[in-house]
Length: 381
Image 1 (cartoon, rainbow, N blue to C red):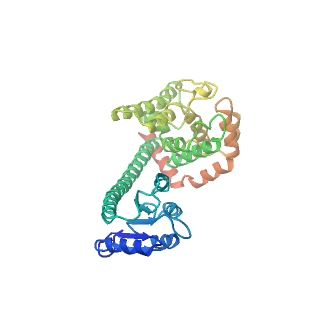
Image 2: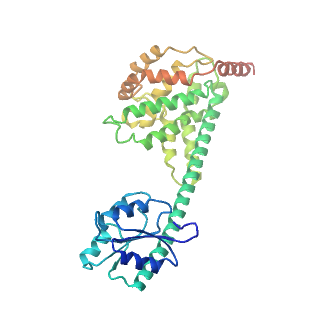
Image 3: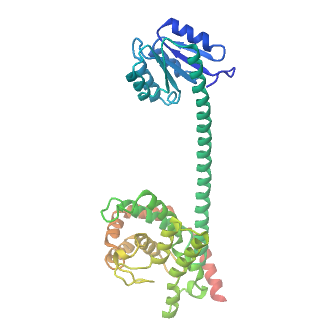
């Protein structure tokens, strides 16, 4: 770090007065010189502002020697990047090897040659200047990449929520259904992450992607006609067949979006799974593919429990809400038939958390009244 006059700062650590005098006289015209006669004092000075740009360090000194001094310099964040040049009267190869092992960048034998000292100091300072520049550029690039990545993730999250909310506005459910099912799914996944069946898949990254993709489970409802989607009574067989296509419509829309990007996108994998298979049942009686057991993607099995539970406890324009106890009994009864038994077991242990999530993201009466009014207008047309 240069001083207030723009000079590079060099710290010379040596217990020999002649060496300190020689180094100071040779380097002082161009650099700011600091000196110390022990390793302990050298460490103290090195940590002060302005931090040295280069340290010239003797090996044999009273107290801690140059090797230990260098090791301590490299162990501290404030001084670890300062280049160290050793000098010593011991010129055997073993000493030079040891110098580099403890983190020095060069070795100057004693007695010191003024020309060699000047040349090696200049070379190391020039190298440090380039290294610092590259480090600063890399830090700037890393910061910029992190900023843009965070921005892209935020845009992705907002887009996903907007798409999911668009589907919800056409259904009798509210936008809070998205928040509740997201949280239910995450709670189930985190509870099961140590389970032998699921541990390999339920990583932090997988759970994060699942949380983000969960809102798109009903995106295909955008393609369902209003007279079916908003029907307050029971659907006919023919109408239900049309309703079932929301799974394939959602999957195909996401798959088409991925194709338009021209390359596979990890996020779309779970989003497509959840959209296509959240209506599958453990015993194979679900739709659209009548998958059985573990053939149903894990993401969809988790969503099945979350989606059904929320549908049961929520008020809709065509039904009153069911109690948590009643909804729980239905979920438990569906273990091994509708739902993966191990996921139901996790649900049982998480009942308090499910209740808390439902309360945290409860639907507002104004939202429900608006849905009722919309449905009434629809019935009049």
